[in-house]
Length: 480
Image (tube, rainbow, N blue to C red):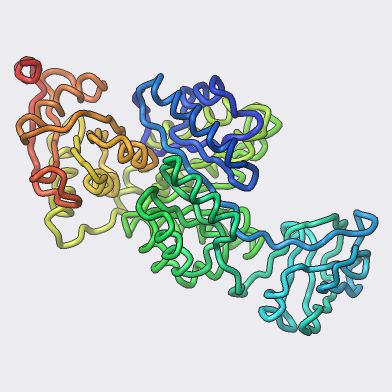
């Protein structure tokens, strides 16, 4: 099942997409990976979904990436005696530590550690920014505010404090338990929410202990101040535009998205664009023109993947939403300006043999009009370098490690095939030719460019480039 596009599609599983048949249908419609939102998923259900995805993977013979998205700390107000209450602009409103039902003048804020992060003149946002408060006075037990933008407010709505580094760890006890369950099951990616500082990623990496790749969700302005360090410590980043749009001005989000994609690409890290990409398709079989342009822009910018959230988890048209993303990506990648934009943002190779070989492979493949670049990898580093180059020929990845194949399924342009290990470089070239034919990347008489690290099994040791002809003689030798 070769995709005719390079950008990948991630579908979130939920009430409308949790059966084996629907998961398979989503994959066949174009989903390359599945996200499981741990905010709404018990450990038992996680095990069930993981098992169903692996059944589909086995049935279709294609590696599928599974992303477990940790909830992170959720800052919420308490409850009201008679919800909802109406807050009126210009009135006072108090957030305090009292364990009592609230009213139109006050409500509890059961997060005492936050009081030290607030100061007069600061802003507090409630219910995804629908209600805005200005801090006027702060004590150890309450915060007095003035309502700037009022509205209805009900129980346990979320709280955002933009522009402040909050004294909260990215991992709650629930997150730690969820992480351990997901990693023990064998999910491929762990998404870390509420990242504010590089230490958040470093701590998560210690807990994961190499069992999964780590995706840092960039949704807090504080993370932007340490972006380079966070990207360096992560395997990938997610442009989590939902909270970014609350904690920053909405007009800033497009620029932040471009910055995040560019930073990740320059560092050779995977990058996902997420949140509200096809929001109208939760209830409509067709997207808006603006949503189509939004997906198209992410593809133009060279994002590795675009993601569906509620559209595939709880929407009425999950298959249609995946189909739209698939078609938009294929259409944009065929546009005349697409390659120019990618080439203009291509990172310079590092002064290392692996980077030099990989850059040369792209240049050779494009010069010779080769049918594909074939990379042989155990750890995945060779394939990741090939993806970073964004070549204009397909990339076929051969690996003896199914865990590597699954993890790489999220990277731009990589078509991964699990295959048996090889004993020699010549055997690997013959296998590359044979599988390139079988997977419809090349025909007899065409050339492929093969890269690998010799001796095999040495992570990051890409040091060989070979131009090979796909011929019937090669097939006969391989079968013999």
